[in-house]
Amino acid sequence: MPAEAPPASPSSFSSSFTSSPPVRLRLPREDLASASASASASASSTAEITKMEKENARLALRLEMLREVTGAVETIATFKVPVAKESKEKAVPEAKAKAKAKAKAKAKSRTETSPEVSAKLAEIRELRKKLRAEKTSDDEVKAQVGPLFDELKTLKAKSKADAAEAKAKAAEGTEQIAA
Image 1 (cartoon, rainbow, N blue to C red):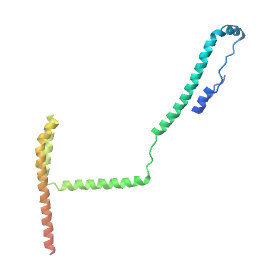
Image 2 (cartoon, rainbow, N blue to C red; image 1 turned 90 degrees about the horizontal axis):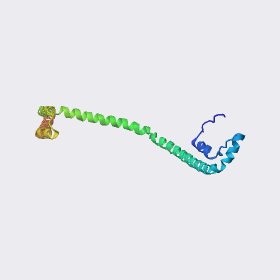
Image 3 (tube, rainbow, N blue to C red; image 1 turned 180 degrees about the vertical axis):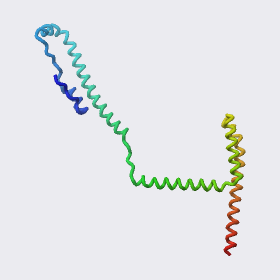
């Protein structure tokens, strides 16, 4: 008997199960006599066979439905939202501008720190390193570093005031030169 080709799609797969007639076996002549003798015993098995064929047809339909759902799930899982060129082109310059402004602000803050502020920051870092090396808890580290942060705030405020005063003096000096 030649081998059948696999079904092309799920719908043809299920239709091959539901639309094909039941298979009948041909028995040799001597087996026909014994087959007719056991006809009464096979009546109950025939009912069972038809019941199983109906169950197979129902399961084939369910299988087809699940294959369609699987295909839909794969489509959803592999879906990628297309990105418009305009938004991509806008995002790159905006990101560069933000990074540039951030770097500029960082550089400005580094150059404007006074030596006292830099020394206090170094002192805080060294104390933290020492406490962490000793495996001190975070709460204890915060408790010991807290007063240093308060000092740092006052130093920054003083530094800022000194810088504003120096800037005012410089502006006043340029006005006197211009006059």
